[in-house]
Amino acid sequence: MIKPKPALLIAQLQMMSAALTKYAEQYVPVSPSKADIEACAAELMNALQVQVQTAGVAEKATKDLYATRDKAIDLLRRMRDAVYAHFGKSDPRIVEFGLDTLKNRRNRNGNDSATPPAEG
Image 1: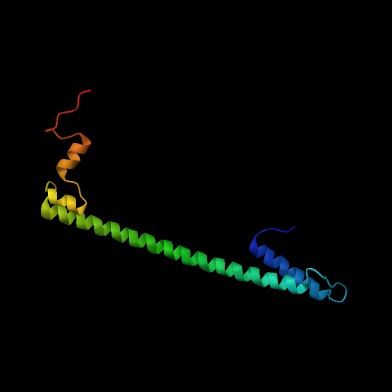
Image 2: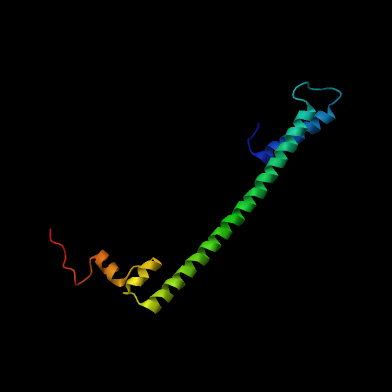
């Protein structure tokens, strides 16, 4: 039975090549040849190695991305806290930093006591 897993295919190709070598006097296939089998085994082995190396690179890239993302989140939280500490949470200038004023957050949530609830 031929299974599609690359490692198993490599083993089967190598076994086929060894058997063709052993029985070279009794059986010489025209197509595919022993050279075709060996070339395919080498090509498949190379492709498998590249895939394994690429997977390792992708895993490292993902870890690096998450580490950088966590650093960015920490940096933004610290900067947000510093801006709030310096300007306060109600100063309209903090909007330029991409932050909401305390007044804007209350209005958006409908919790501002100065704004009567909408009747409907």
